[in-house]
Length: 180
Ligand code: PNS
Image (cartoon, rainbow, N blue to C red; front, side):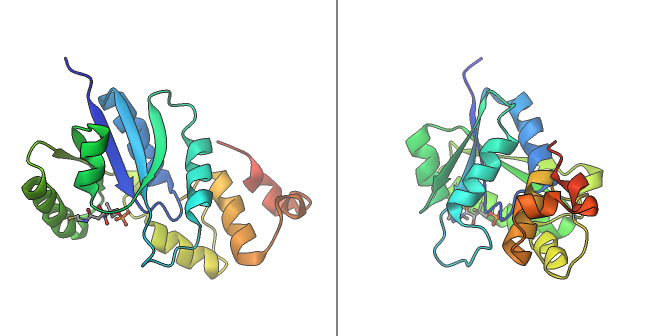
């Protein structure tokens, strides 16, 4: 069997438990999995590219066949550069399907040798999106069921200016500092 290289592209602003579930499952399916963060100057992300890269590196370091990278331009060009065979995407609900199908068909038109593989989101994570996580966190809601503790901590810091050391002195926040 040939060495199959897959790319899991996305914005990851921030990474969620749904993203990490897909990374875990993708790492079992493919020989190599590259989590590729889009460098998109048009978007106004909450976390900088470097912040997202660092979070993803820490969150995925237990997977030895997974690495984190960034890309810009066309995804198919990036895939060609890497010699990748597969694009991995997650589908949460039927509402994702239309956009994902359009993207997969367009990518196949641009590069017929590149296959898009969809994994259905785990039930527990099918309602999670980075956008919803940011909205809830901005409004002071709990997001620890949706994102790993490292991301809870970074969201607190980003949105409320709490340094991790300040959080550690608060009993309620202390629990959130535990790493997965
Ligand atoms: O996490 P997201 O924001 O849903 O990811 C979207 C992403 C990064 C996969 C998509 O925007 C993308 O591939 N952008 C790169 C530009 C490109 O190739 N566009 C044509 C795809 S049809």
